[in-house]
Image: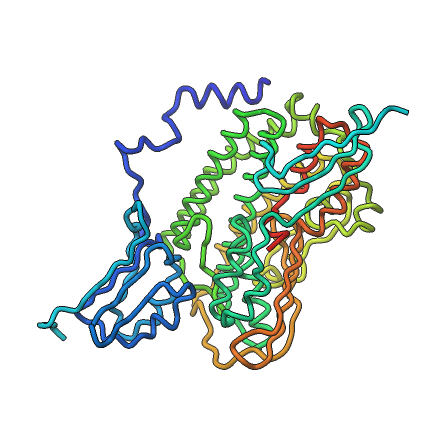
Length: 115
Length: 359
């Protein structure tokens, strides 16, 4: 047991390896694939993202100028972000907030939209 | 002759990370026969290929298994690239090697931890997984994910690695190597571990070949077979020799995996040093028409991807032969004649991945 004893003693006198959550929150990397956000003001509701989504989690209602995402279906693959012709879709590096029920986030374009 | 009895092992068992059921036929404490049954996590992913187009299916292929997700994506993309004659850029193939070797390190560290857990060495299990965490963090920084990396795409890779991250990779490996050496000395020299692994579940060279074992299971029995030697991705430009052992017991499998961790570290260093400049993905048009067998060396062994396209965006057939599936006959062989107490450790020495097996 002498081999592991050395490692255990070393660990005993060093900082804990686990993060002290919630006092210290984990920092995400710039590359971390998190929640998808839409800058709805520049969205043209072309529907390419809906076609590219492998889990069918997106919906576009052109007449109501509404773009919606089912957060429970999204797998953060980034297919929609790559396909977006206006580059209004972005991928955040933080995950979407946890929720107790399945919810769909709806983005509705304001009437006085700035092109 | 003593009375025979059947002990059900699994699908829920503390040692099993995933569900598999084995009916162990015992004579006293000795296992005389084993009847495996699988199918608890079957998801029909091969059939799904008819409903998802071939680009979307990359995301499904990555989800066949949570541990080798990088290489499942890579195997599928490699098959499609060969059908469509897409030449991937040099930088992309080196980045694929780096990603694949990091997956191998984290998979082998995971296995070492689970192995320690199987014989009740909890502190060794925790310390091994502590090291694995650094690799997962690095993978997240590189690809954006910790489990599903979603980094490989048809034609190349999705994300480039900048110089600062490349130097960080070298720094982390430099820091990690002595720590892995320290932990591996416990596995190789500690009397507690040796007592549980040495001479347990011996698979001879002939048996390994005739039962079609793959990966570390095969190499631990003295067969020199490593699919990386086929030279896919950038392996042809890297200098390495497959790790083999001759004993064929559980300890030999442990030794092979430990040596492969260091080999992977060396391969990553070589790939980082030789990483060429240039694009990371090649553009392509059209749909796959034709068929191809793609062979890769996953941490658990050789995986085969068979893809058949018909010129439309939906594939005709996609078949995966995963390493755990190939290792099951060898597992049954080594289980026969062992003690009941050795069953958990023997199941673990094939590094079972049931999600892969059942797809």
